[in-house]
Amino acid sequence: MKTISVVTPCYNEEASIIECVDTVQEIFRRHLPNYGLEHIFCDNCSIDRTVEILKTIADQNPSVKIIVNSRDFGILKNTYNGVLAANGDAIVLFLPVDLQDPPDLIPEMVRLWEHGSEIVYGVRARREENFLVRLTRKAYYRVLSRVTYVNYPPDAGDFQLVDRRVLEAMKRIEDAQPFMRMMTFDCGFRSVGIKYTWRARKHGKSRNRFSHMLEQGLNGIISFSGIPVRLALFAGMLIAAASVLYAVLVILLTLTGNIRSFPGVPTIIAALFFFGGMQLLFLGLIGEYILAIFNQVRRRPLVIERERINFK
Image 1: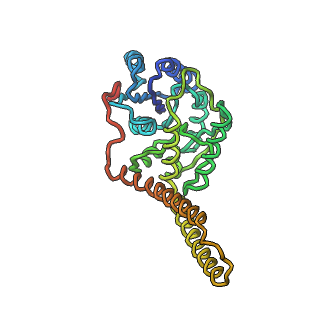
Image 2 (image 1 turned 90 degrees about the horizontal axis):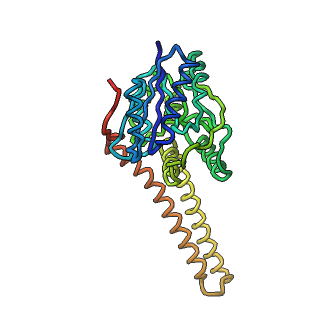
Image 3 (image 1 turned 45 degrees about the vertical axis):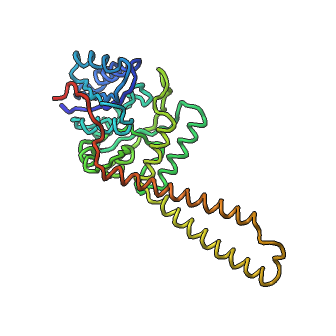
């Protein structure tokens, strides 16, 4: 019997845990009876009853496995650590505990996997969220798709089912800041997408704050694209060329007597602010890449675990 691993990160999700477990179990019982299930919950040091509820469920159901972190390491590292612990023949890389990505698609994903697709990814064709956030996400994913060297389909998220071979290839990528939705496509392999509606949360609010999403977005571009640095280089060259042309123009106007007033102080001030701002922008951009290198060379563990439950 083949086994499908499902990885679910959680942080203070006591209201959603039971529904998530029951829903996945029912889907496998009805639609995937010939497959084993390994459901891995990665808890990011919750301070509510999430771990307590999970332990109660795991005592009665050995297919439910738990990894508890010693502190909050962020959703990307937490999820990827759970993926690395998966033992299935195919792995659902990310199933949110609030079921915003619909688990009903898992049987279809498995069917496409059995027909030869090694990466089956969900495409968020429609989102149940406010217009501004939806527009921002769409714009970001289209920029990400264009600037990276990876053939990344826009609107694809971490809700993907991958073959064991893909996971083994991902393990060879030693990335201190894992960005899974890109890593799978970076590995290659045959892929196919399924469109679906990304649902609104049923319980509570998202713990993924705007600052976290901004950090994750920058990480995706910095990790898989050199275009920002090249743009900074070209912008610097253009600004330098424009400065030389401006200096030549001022000299010519001075020699021909067309500049009669005192040299333009406003122009100097504007130029100073402009060039100062551009320098800070480019230094910050380069700093992001240096920070990525710094995090990589320290070779710290993805997470530090407090305990594992139901793992052999």
